[in-house]
Image (cartoon, rainbow, N blue to C red; front, side, top):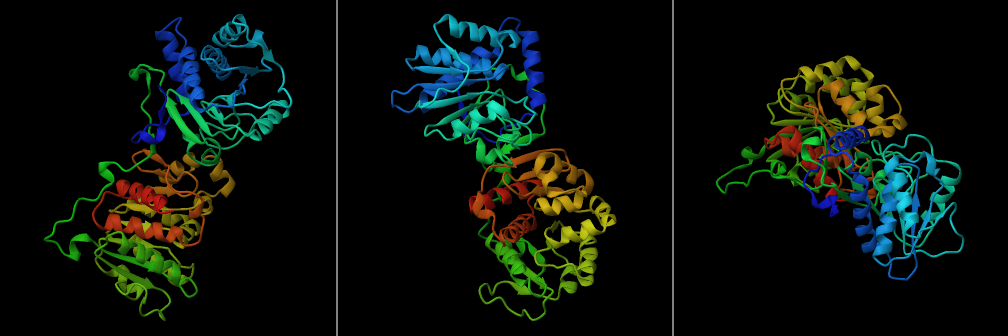
Length: 468
């Protein structure tokens, strides 16, 4: 029975290569038992749930691989459930994989037709997209692109099987054209591309059918989907008999002339999220009080970075002056957890020797780059970062030895121990100046209260998204 991915707690994600390996191991252990029947029946169950009650047929697009076979099994099952079904496929029957060929033969044996092109002027109650699965790496063009554009324009729901056709299962990037699904039913395990980059716009609501694959056939994977907070993400309850010193003395360094608002936003967010006391070391010395949040203390930044703190953040509105560089060097030597964002990251990128200092720090370092900042740190382009967001976050961890949250659609949070998570909260309202500064303050507040760096970063990213 398909399960909504959002109802699972930190479910693992599998790369396309992982899934193919599982399928091979299944076939070796269960000779003669195809996963295709289970996948097609799960697809039919979900399709019957989402088809509009209009009397119009279900349109099934069947491609040339196993994904097309899944769709053909679903078509036959939907017919048995009383739905009219139109199957469209350009696949050469002689070149189909054996189980997909058997599914096509079974569909035709029960009287089903296979059309070579989309019929014109027809309404549908649902589209089942089985054109391409997780193995697609080429650009979609020609007739397939025309079909995808046509089904995207239909006024009915679209259910994609495994991944929306045209979407890369690993990266979430669109290969030219992709089906814009309302629902995606993915098989065996979740795929990272459904939750980051373009996947957030094209996958719709994601469902999982494990197909009852033997658990021991599943590989150990480093990635998961952050669907909700776990117990480890939550700060412990506060005792009544406590004081502000129990909840972290933290500092924010930034707020150069013309950029003061960034430092204020970070400092205010740290207070809102429970830091016991927050001091802003603003480079603009004209700032003497925050009238909107008078609890926020101020100090010269050079003095602040030299003080004993439970956590320090550097970057919001920092600028890239010589003074900012000196403050970065002082912060790198601080013995407390360090949160780096914005111009702190740009200064690191301009002086790569500083990056090597991060891994040698005695306390955790946490970085929250957007794709442009990540590109500068890795010596590449923002488009290259977006082309493989999971890979980029993990490369940055390897380079810096830090915990990294690569911001964007489906923020990728990667850790030095090799684990990573793709966040599912948030939305386009976070694409606004200042939201990253708030995230810096939220991360700072949590590590300042003693939460482990990995848990603090994941929790802050999740809660930040929920606030969108």
